[in-house]
Length: 220
Length: 209
Image (tube, rainbow over all chains, first blue to last red; front, top):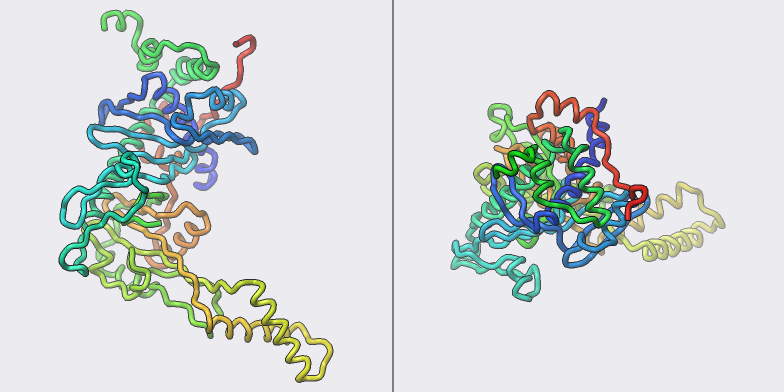
């Protein structure tokens, strides 16, 4: 099979990643983890677009995944197409919109960037939280206007790569689950109950997802 | 569409991590060869793309110090296009055709004559206009073998990939769930499961709710 065909046929996996992130972030109250990064905050915010064929559902809300409309769309066979994601790690707070089928990133807001003189200056997210207009130029010119300073570029690329690393690690964890028998036996039934609005025991789900037996769970 | 300020919107593309010996030394010459040549009214092209300095669309001299930044190769993908408003072109062409008919004393013009008139009018209008310029930043992280292109439009991406290929003789592959999975070392069972994968679709269970 041609590479282009292989790529096309597996685009849905990215949508399933968004679905899984959405459910787990709700079940675990916005705290996810990866082996490399430990625990961090992650939740779906602002925008959630679901679709299947010509039908699409677009939800704009502070927490768009919480409402019934989003879950109803899932039960009509739609899967997330793109989602606004907030990632909160230590002092870093980042938001972006991730497209499921291409993993393209939109509106990645990095919390801080270094100014030309090396001082940390506010980024878009800080502006937004402080109620200032987003995207305002914050650059402070040095004494030599023509002098090139590449520090902000490196800083932005470094932070971008860190976020990409988190997303890649989440994808690895997702694939390990998706390609195991636990996807069908544990995750899909949980997704189904969660989408239907039933109460899900998050601890029991986590233990089953991680392959821990009831005995091991009792031992802690 | 900028890598240097504001929020970032980009798509990732993959290039080989290991590059031929002397690639970087030779690449500057290749970049200069495909640098943006601004459109001229007398040229037939309606649109042209080429490289410029990232963040500085007018710098098409591309000094190496502004392209190569410790592990990154940064460029601007600039596209210039003549954008003559349709109604203006139509009116001017009609005026020129009328003038030509009166001068030649003929009722009807051949298709060739009409095409020529349109070309002359287009050239004249271009002399009075400035082409539109669009620039999209591109940063190639050489160690990672990743190109970040700050646009999501498919047309822009295809044009960039073509120019990239012409410049560096390297084919870029767009990021996707498939390509990312390929870079994760899957076990034997996982590889088999990946091959057999089918989409998960949730639907209301009978008797639920």
